[in-house]
Image 1 (tube, rainbow, N blue to C red):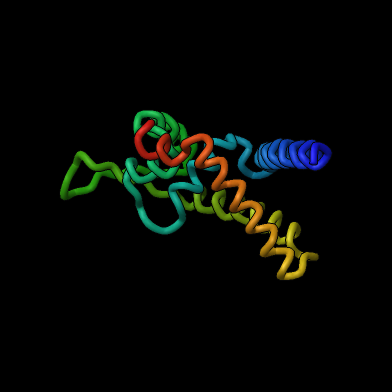
Image 2: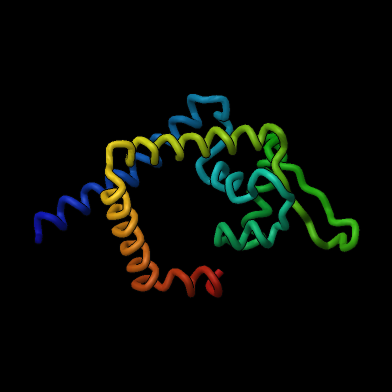
Amino acid sequence: MEKTIQVLNGLLVNLFNDILKIEQTALQEGKFKDLSITEIHTIEAIGLYEARTMSEVAADLEITVGTLTTAIQRLVKKGYVERKRVEEDRRIVQIQLTRKGKLAYRIHEKFHRDMIKHMVQDLQIHDQQLLIGSLEQLHEFLKEKYNLDKQNKGGK
C-alpha cells in the first residue's frame, strides 16, 4: 500500500505541475504571449457566448468582485474583454469576450480537449469509466476534507 501511495502521489504532483508548465509555455510561445494562466482561466470563466455580470464570473472563479475587477481591467487593456453597463440598471457591469478573447478561449479549450483525448484514446470504455470514477472519488474527498464547498460559497 505504501508503494502505491508514493507512486500515485508522485504522479498527481507531476501531472499538476506538467499541465501548468505546458499551459504557460503554450501561452508564451503562441499567439497570446501577453496572457498569464490566471488570465486565460478568467477568459474561460467569462465564456464564449453571452455577456455575464462581474458577480457571476467572480463566483465561478471563487474570487471577490474586487479581485476580478483588477483582472478585467488588464484584459480590457489587452483587448481580450469588453465591459458594458446594463441600460436598465447602470450599476450592473457586464463583461464579454472580444473576437481576440474568443480566439484565446478556443485555443485554450483545444489544448484541454487534445490532452483528454490523448489520455483516454487507448482505454476501453470500462477503463474510462474507472478513471472517471476514481477522479470523482478524489474530488469528493478533497471537497469534504478541506470544506471546499463552504469556502467557495461563504468564505470569499
